Image 1 (spheres, one colour):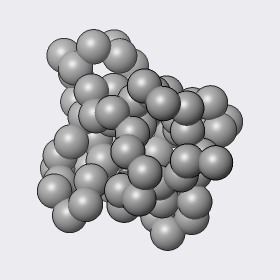
Image 2: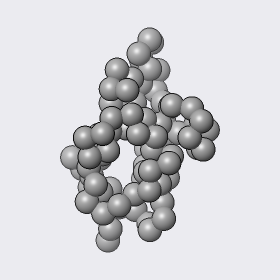
Image 3: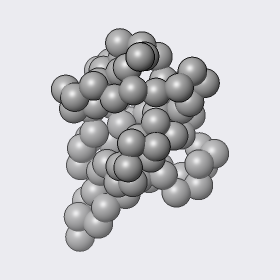
Image 4: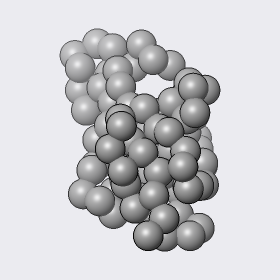
Length: 84
């Protein structure tokens, strides 16, 4: 099984999946919140136009999960909008 970690937990993925696709496939539809109101956000547009699906990938903040292809061993951190 091919996995990456999300907030320290292993998450399996299929070759060719984006981070967002793997997260949604695992049942996780929200992985950050807005600054104001702390409203949940996950994938919205799915094509990299909006910023709803931001994550930190291997220490690089502000990555769009819908555009980053999942790779074995990568470390993904989710969080609040102030992580942008």
